[in-house]
Image 1 (cartoon, rainbow, N blue to C red):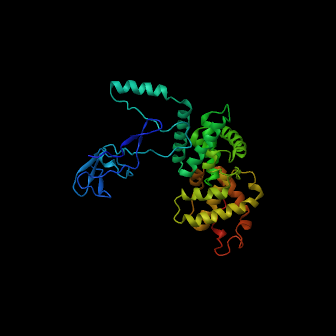
Image 2: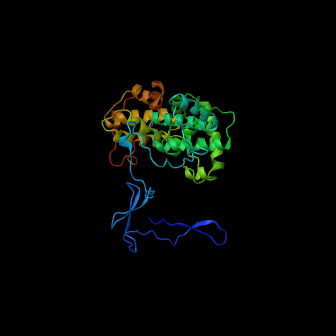
Image 3: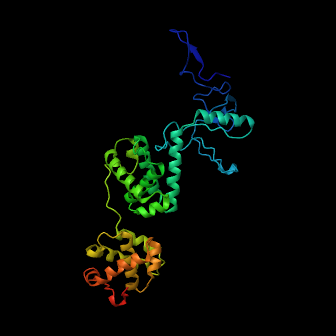
Length: 348
């Protein structure tokens, strides 16, 4: 059997180097160019003309496209490569984990945990887990969850907001992420979600806004997130934005029609002086209450108050101001095609 690329002595240094001019040729056929094939299944280099094995243990250099997930009872595909690097996590992510199985492996697992114990990374992962759990519970979607994680990462890297609890920072990150994704949530809703007081969420929110306006576009993490430009603060939550979400939870037969009328009323309600300074939650609830009667699907104020998270009395008070200004709200300019019948409205 002839050698595959045999080394030859170098005249200068005396070291052996690979001779790239050597050609592997079948000793039996002596064909040129050689008719050789690589059988990766057996790891052999074979002459296709006569079948003589010229090399063994050939390494398969082709791409691996096979998957072994069906052969694994745990559906854990032992892929040849892992996931792409996660910019949200610091440190080397290509690590080997020793299974906690058996006496010897148990001791090795403890030693590995001591050597690779990174408190900062664990704290980050715990925060990401909490953010994911909170955002999933209010159905805000992946975009809000990723944005909130991104904001938390920026704060953690800059060691900003010192003295604030992790729970308060998480609440503030979720609040800003919701606002940036046009999925507004109120302080009250974030309080119910995270159990952080509304006053504390407000303080953290103001500090986060100041921090983000200075940090926009500074590093790779920033460029990979939602703030690839300078952070732009958005207006506070309005009654118009809340009407759509509340109507979808009310079980109307025609929610699109009720939402459309409620949003128009909420937009016009900004001109009602008596409603100035009132919470957008109560204004949105009162607009939905009025819209439900105008459309012919009346709902009790108590039911709407429960969805909006305000008291029944608050809704009735806001509705009373709307009813007094109904002539200014229900105009032909606002409803050119389908003018609602104001006679359907209750007095209280």
